[in-house]
Length: 393
Image 1 (cartoon, rainbow, N blue to C red):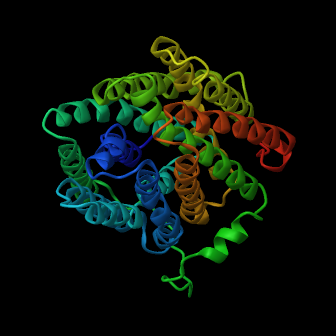
Image 2 (image 1 turned 90 degrees about the vertical axis):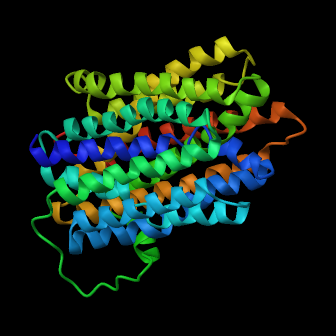
């Protein structure tokens, strides 16, 4: 791995910290603005819906103008958006801030394109494994910063997130070289939202099937993400600080899996089989979590979930990259991120429609649905595995 790889991994780590600082606080922060569960689900969703429209454009622009300038623009949006959210005087400004962060939120897709630029076919799985580990490490360090920020207020977490994103921005400006060696020159309208490409992308050989799988996987995960917090707080009667510590523990497990686990597993299993293994235990964990409303039981299942959930995204990203030509890595990463953003926008809204604040037991319903749907996705993936398995895997 060359110098550019490790720089983008560091930038990705810091960017991940900026994102994960907010995860344990967003639900409760919305409640401070007197938002209902349904309104809070839209607070979760608006960020992802904005990303859905933005990421294909950002991906194509990174193929045309380079990775570095687009990453800078994305990080500037994160800095301003979180600063605005942390000082929001009302719910309308908070929603505007989340939209701004989302509409410029091509950070991960551009970073994935950089990884594809600087790795060879042979070591790309390892590269995406380390990339995933940097995300996982962010899930370790982010909650720690979040816990410190919460001592002052939940809004302070957004201000700290903005400051952390500013560090990633400085590193990008001064230390990250341009990694795109062959820029795409064409007459594509840069203001094209890419909706036609999103539909067409589902028909691409091999990659299209992976887009479908990732969209479905993302939907199930965000069903879990939204319902998980009120279930933990209202049904298990825990507090936000305890929730933050749980995210910290999940992050540690994820890092260990992605640093050592993937490296070890790829010696004995194909990427496709590792993906199937991750999906199976993810779905099983979703189904088991709400079965017994006991904190100790939930923590055990949560650790099993974190072990195998850490395998899913690195495997999908690697398979998409291996099935994509070098000059289209940015475009495909952008499309993939956009499908995932659409899923992230849909999941919380579905969960918000299923829960009822007056009946806390309903917070477990989205977890059951997520588990069942993930099993269906796994079955679909197994049946269609020949359509997306690269020859070398």
